[in-house]
Image (cartoon, rainbow, N blue to C red; front, side, top):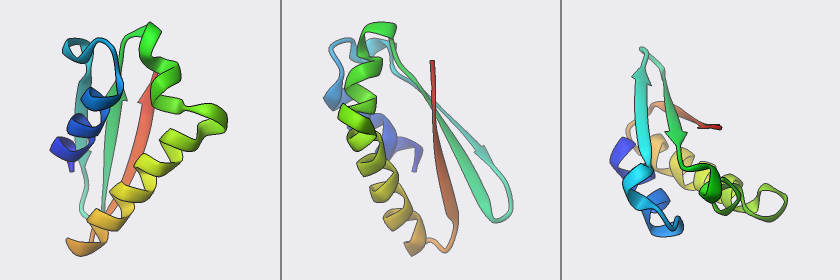
Length: 76
């Protein structure tokens, strides 16, 4: 899951070297924290949160296959 979020985020931003992804795993749920440069925050969130919502949808669909719940948190 971490690699998926990293791949998508690096494709969207202007400064891919500043993209950081941390994964905190629990038994049922894993929390994925995404941190990008201040300039790129708007590109990750998108208009009215559409890009962030799309990333969360892809993440939940792929985490369903491994029977785990994943939560994406975008850190400023």
